[in-house]
Length: 167
View 1 (cartoon, rainbow, N blue to C red):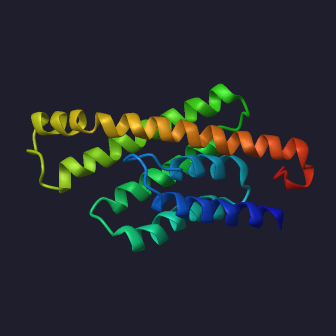
View 2 (tube, helix red, strand yellow; view 1 turned 180 degrees about the vertical axis):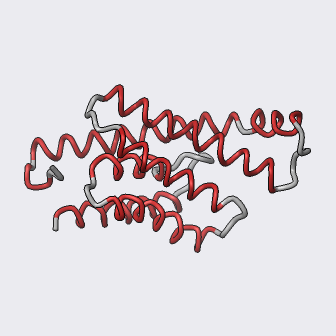
């Protein structure tokens, strides 16, 4: 029961944060993916939650050509969280950075390949990744901040209010 309270809270907060003005690519989605993969035993829910957040908010913000790649990146983020089963802050930070890199590589490859903005050669691919560096910087900052917040708040809540512990 308490897991569903936490999950519902995460969904609501994440959906709301997508509508609050923010820097491009600063989003809690990859942190939630990492958190869900790390803590939730029911892997179906750990995958479903961030995908539901994305889909519900995309219905309001607008569907886009890179959705499949973004959603795939989120699913990989959950998997990374499920493999990072060591509650070491450096390992969690490393998993967050790995998720940022995976998201950057996959989504920008998709933009290069399908959006028709860049030439389909090495120069175009390089241009695509170079132009995306500011967005990558924002994603890394957002992912680390949201990951720190989620894991930190959860850890504190578990210490001060044991009934909210997911373990």
